[in-house]
Length: 331
Ligand code: UT7
Image (cartoon, rainbow, N blue to C red; front, side):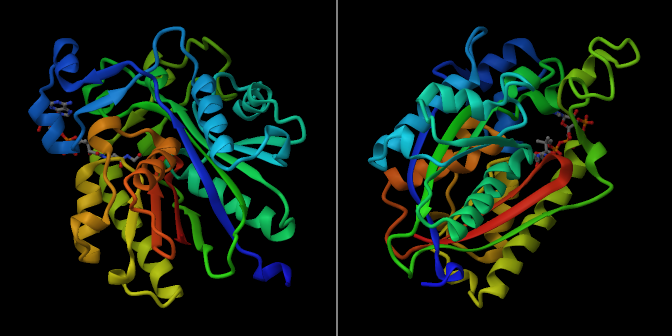
């Protein structure tokens, strides 16, 4: 077997969500908003939110333990842990070292990647490359976000969108040559990042720098502009992957898009002429959980028996820093 013929596959999935649920009705009490506006403009009904003292690393660790258990692996079998997040507990230590410690994966190298909502697809693609060169490796890819900590709860146009959560997958050599990760697209659009930012906490401004207004310690977004670029980009990524692999849209068994806005998902579904059954949607329950949204959706889809052997699964994402990604998997 040549190295390039090795395919990687998702061997198992685990998730963990904070138990506290914030409904649109709860938001009506603190903001000038309404359940009907949020539902119509975004599709979101509820989102899971960390309690004051709760950490996202706790959920990343729980999701990782569940994924390992399902794969019948010991933490010591892991060679690498990749955490996709832009809201780790701390800048240092990374989330990945906290997961390594928390599960006892003493033989694993660890690093975080920051690619916002596309982070999980970036992580899977990186894992795929490692498996091609080290077919016996087992890699944990985690998507985990604590967005509630980075939201300006006074900004009704953004705070209603986001939720917290974690998902983890174990990636290894595919048990069959026919199944596994087939192809991926990664990219980013230059000159637009200022439409969606989180400036505070980086090295541009010293902590508590008086030049930086307080709002800059939270996510700021020009939603309408981001929306337009998101729909266009997701369509382009999807069509690139399909064309390159000579696959017509009707051959997709399940589209798992990043869950940012139901209207974005619907736009893509209609462009591809897919039935509702072929597109996984759970934004109504969780809102936008950024890098965690795709592993959470994958987990639920598998639970509902929507990931059947040999199914063609396409997952696409777009997010802050204007990163995008798409991945085609034969299950
Ligand atoms: O994952 C990263 C990628 N993120 C995205 O892809 C998000 C993309 N953007 C969006 O999802 C949408 O643009 C939003 C949901 C953020 C906003 O929806 P929109 O249809 O673009 O609304 P808008 O910003 O154009 O606002 C329309 C109106 C405005 O009022 P006026 O100026 O028409 O009087 C807003 O002030 O809706 C108002 N508005 C609200 N009203 C009630 C904005 N937020 C709210 C709210 N409740 N929460």
